[in-house]
Every structure is written in structure tokens, then in C-alpha cells.
Image (tube, rainbow, N blue to C red):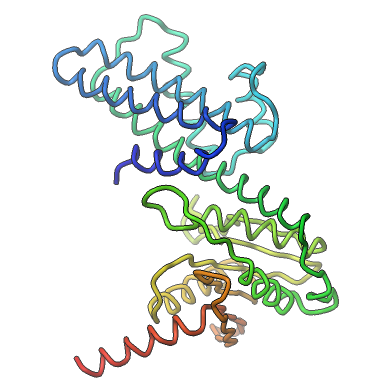
Length: 335
């Protein structure tokens, strides 16, 4: 895995707007930090300090870009310290982003900023690059998700589907099935970056959340919903958790170009584990189409574990998956 390549790919998402030019500047700081690191290993070990300073510039630049995109506010006259406090006090950053943010700020930025006598070694420079690259990669994900959410919300305001496609007195799971089928027909055709899928999971998450919030305002929608495991301080994260009154629903999304029984089987088992641990009875596995013309199939099943009955709904592109499953069955027979 090359963290810098991932950063470049994600920065491509913001390359079409002059307002987002600062995102590419963040990546440039990481590129220069890596060059300083390589030169430092060749004997110019004083450059390891410059690795830290460049990483700090990337950190502050990333915070400003995130503040602008996620909060929708101009960061030009806001100090990095105030942005940090804003993120901390207003729960702007998602849990996993906040953990990386806190780690880099306390372990690297604060120490190198407030003690000019520090001298960094090769190992410390290496750790700084890894930490800042990981943080900015995950932060870019949240920025992409927010931008996708805003774009979908704007698109829906321009040409909003009829709200009567989901009746408010319908069961929650049935309403969401209708909405997912409707969403599939407007699934965006786009490419993000050079090696990333045509629509990334974070883009899909932001777009789908906007769609559900706009057409089902009476339903609470939470993305990256944390579910405690049986291990201390370990959590699973379901893609979506929805609630309306006493009704609860978990949605697991699989964004894949590959079709086959393993995706359906693996996704179903993953969804079932989320339901079991959370105590939620209803779950949907959603695999979006590659284009809006693909017909979607809905398969409803139940699974009983112990004394509890779980309702599972799988929604996936009909022709593509049926064709792939038939091919798998033929290969199994031939083998």
C-alpha cells in the first residue's frame, strides 16, 4: 500500500475546482517531506527535522481545507488552533478521524512546534510521515463524503423525486427498499481519481445519506454506526443505522464491480453479525448498480439464531449477479 498514491487519488476528487486548490497543496507538502526523508537517509540527516516541519504544514493545511469543506466556513482568518478547537468541541470529525487527529497533534505537531531544540531521527521522521499520511487519507475520506452529500442534496433540490413513493405509514424496511430502488435509478456515473473505483464507498455513503435525508425526513439516518463487540474497546461499524420511532434498521453497502455468490454470502454474514451484536432485527444488504439502467432484484429471507428471528433483505443488480452466479455454478460442475 502506498499512502502517497492514495492521497494523490483522493485529491483528484477536488481537482476540478479552483476553490479546492489547497487540497493539492497539502499533498505537495507530503511529497516534499518524503523527498527530505530519502535525502536524509543518504547522509543529510538534518533533513529529518524538515520532514517533521513539512508534515506539520500538511497537517495545518489539511485542517483548513477540512474546515472549509466540512463546516462550510472560510478558514482564511481562522488560526489552526481555533480550527482544532472547533473540531474538538463541535464533534465535526468522525471517531476514527478524531483519533488520528489527536495522535498527530499531541505526538508530533505540538512537540515540534513548541521546542525548537528538538532533533529528530530517521525513525521519528518515518513515523511522522506515516502518521500524517494516515490521518490526511482518512480526513480526505470525510471531506469527499461531505462534498458528495452536498452535491446530492443540491441535485435533489433541482429535480426532487416524488415523496409519495414512500408512504409514512409503511414499515421502515419496506420504505427503505423503495428508496434504495429509486436511488439506484439515479446512481451517478462518474470517475474519481486514477485508480479508485468510479464511485468510492465514501462518495456513495455521502450521496445515499443525502438521498435518504431528503426523501424520508421523518427517519433518523446515521452513517458509520458503531456497534460494540464482545472484545473490550473494539467496535464494528455498520454503514448505516436508521430509526423511526421504535423501528430500527441496519444497511450494509457493498460497492463492487465484481458479481458473484461470495459477495452476497459474505455481505449477508457481515450484516447478520451486525444485527446479532446490536440487537436490531431488520437488515438490508445493498449492492448498487454500475449504471442506472441495471434492473435491481430484491430477495427477502429470514434467519433464526437462538430464539431470535432476523429479517434480511438483499438488493442487487439482477442480470449481472444472476449471470455471475450461473457461471460460478458451471465452473464448479466442470471442476
